[in-house]
Image (cartoon, rainbow, N blue to C red; front, side):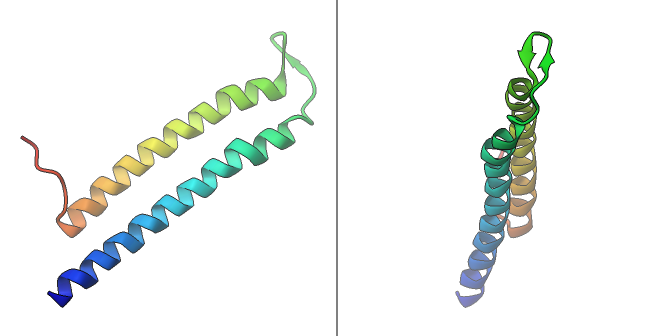
Length: 87
């Protein structure tokens, strides 16, 4: 019983570490990059470049965050034997 509890705690620590790192990346992309992008004040295809960076660049990063999280959690679930059954 104790081994199961320790394994569960290790699983959740790793899960929270991955989630925390990805949330920090999300915060930087959403707020920090957007804030400093205002300084890029030239026109790109008729739009301010900062708008383009914020709209397009952040979407790519968000997609990568989702892809990485799903991939990492699948591996972590398999490592601890808690993966979903495929019916």
